[in-house]
Image (cartoon, rainbow, N blue to C red):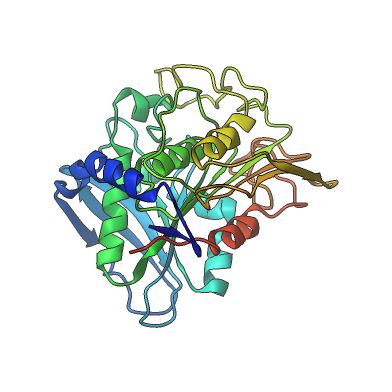
Length: 334
């Protein structure tokens, strides 16, 4: 295993553990079928697609901006709780960067009501991810979203359009929590993660392998409080509890990855727009960067508000550009 140009001393033992833990993934029967067309051969194409995971249809938007026959990087963008694939694209603006840098970006849909329903129905519902302790119906129904994303990665890599060594995951809010979970459980498939406005809960198990992590939070977030505590999620996420325990302080996300990446003490810098805490000396070669963005609530910095009444993101920091720049430094052996 390799991250960037630096090898992981821990990789061999962790890969052994990872292989055992991920045996279930190889037994899944996955069938991918396009609603409009197959994965395009070249150019910029948007396609609504369905993949079958464990007998259940799961939906996603595929936006392919690769320009040639070579396999391209893949960025998976996970919407927040109560959102969907389309809102993830609109809030983050990842298509703008993907079009310029020529990679494939995928916006998966979470689930509601036990994960059943068509893509059209999914667009009209409040969807969530089962990130462990959050959120709502996906958590209560124990939806296997790890299997969904694992199968999706395998299917896209098998298409020849996606470079398996350059698979990255980011997400907002509940999608950020799911990003953290995928970083732990699919760390032998993912090259780097970047949760935005997310959290950990304090009881997370060790990851299967070290993971470069860029973590972004808003200093004024009132939905997922930076100091930790109870979530204040939007109404309408279902009649079941959105989360079953309080979140840990925001910095705990970075400290979790710094611990398991074998990092030394961090350095801290600040500007008028943000404070950055950065662990760059790590035995695994996987760094951790934590941005606390000023004048930003529960929103994607540099993006768009997801709905009327939602927090307006600051434009003084562009999370999407920062995330892509971070991702470009890391890859895994195929």
